[in-house]
Image (cartoon, helix red, strand yellow):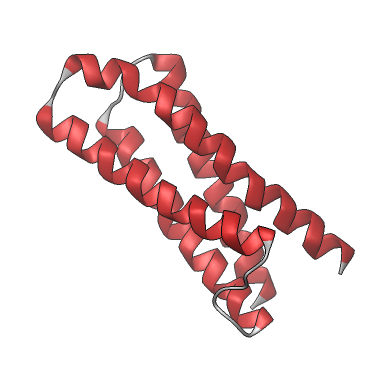
Length: 122
């Protein structure tokens, strides 16, 4: 179970990082970015669920637990908003979307890094 958790969490990190920074560099939200955001969310959810199985609880009221839950909720909102912007096809919103993406990515890094540190010190 640990190997699945590690693989999926790292896959989520890779996908989410590629999606966010590709969107920022390209300067315009595209459908493939939204697909990457959704894929990163799915991988993060699978990895987090696998980690939860190992710990024996889905949520712990700790710094890592709170930031992790917040990050997954933000990732969901981010992917949903990206999809909505693309459906509405509003060019102004597409161009400005990357500002929110980078903030969500930075917040997502907090539980990623603290989880890696916490796991390495156990």
